[in-house]
Length: 163
Image (cartoon, rainbow, N blue to C red; front, side, top):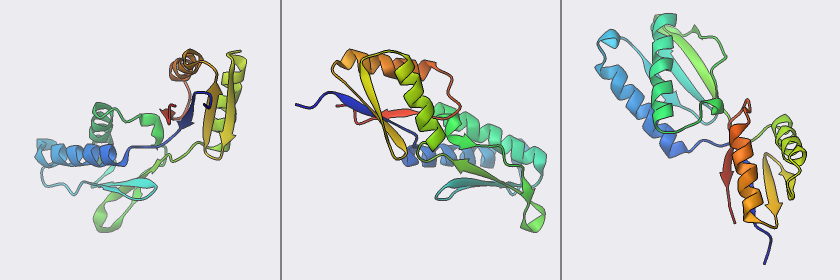
């Protein structure tokens, strides 16, 4: 039998994301401070598109969205909110929020280095946009998971395919 392993990936559960956006839109439609506003959140393939009337309202839309994402346990590090809002049609502003899909090359190297520095008896292998960690003992793998969770990485990391 093969040694136990798991993958470290960065992906957002699309159904949870849809639920969070639906909840955010429901709250926006009922909140007094949004009454009559043209605020919206759309999910596209690699990004969220937020629209509202002005910079202040778009910040409120982001706040509502962040609260709903947190409630559904979707890591906020999986989203890049850094882009500034730009002018859209009909006197509205639009902000695009990039959704992280897969680990970037630098992130996979960072994870691999972190695991190797830990001196645990596991083997990290970069596999495209994920890292597979293999070891003889499941306890060592669980230690790696705990270490990754506790280290303050600047990106979202999840664990899949635990075998």
